[in-house]
Length: 65
Image (tube, rainbow, N blue to C red; front, top):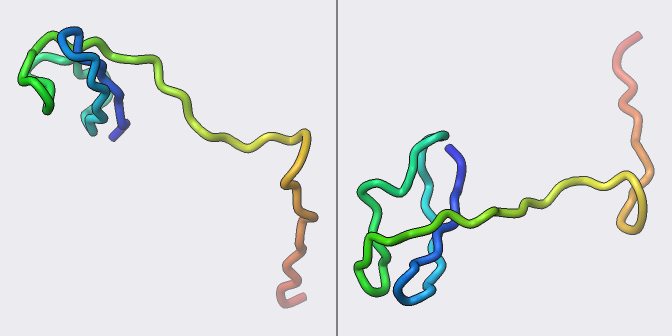
């Protein structure tokens, strides 16, 4: 299940919600103020980059031949 971020339109509190793919904000409320006026934020995620720092050399696995 994806993790979505919602911003409350009343108090601007951002919260994370684990929900099924494609579900909206129906039935959700802000944990800080209780408002049901939530706006889903565009989330970012970490990924692997082939360019730049932090690269390590590949290792090989030698199995039975």
